[in-house]
Length: 259
Image (cartoon, rainbow, N blue to C red; front, side, top):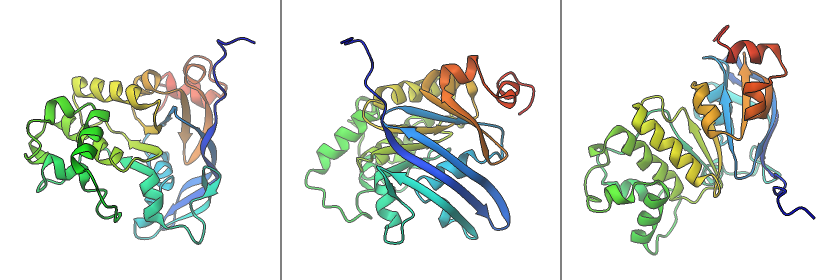
């Protein structure tokens, strides 16, 4: 037996024939793909190709937009999150999300920002200090914030605010973390810190990241999916997608011929 063989990759989520609309606009057209457990999956493609819509379908955020609807299945550990008896709030407890622009609650302290997600979920927090410390440590923000926890979340720098939002999501102990272009509003130093953080937590969480930056996808992702005009063109190991794409559209996109 070869002990150097990596363990088999298991599936955490799966989209099956997912269609999504904004009013009459058909934004996703029959997307089927697997999301591996405790790995980083990057979603790339030109603007308007359905990247953000797809990740919002993975935790039922898409349906909160007026006039939006979804068809198809999204399985989390084999269970359809769009089942008739499934509570979307519980879904978002297990599948957290970090948005493009850092959005800490400006009237709340750093401490209360971390705890904010627990309260609407009706969770009793027995040891809030421990929850705050653990979440901030997992988000690589504890050393910078531990002496200023009573300050407003908006007093932090842009990169720190984004890590605070990640800590807020991690405080819920989700199984999956969705990140919708989390670095697009950040400078290169803050971007590098977020990318380091993704590497640090990917052994504990399943991560799906939407990025317009192909170099970022190549740096952080194990698997990459290329979306175009609401459909998946190609999905595979990141190295294969960027060095040996199987589809001509993928090659044209990553070599800059369009997009």
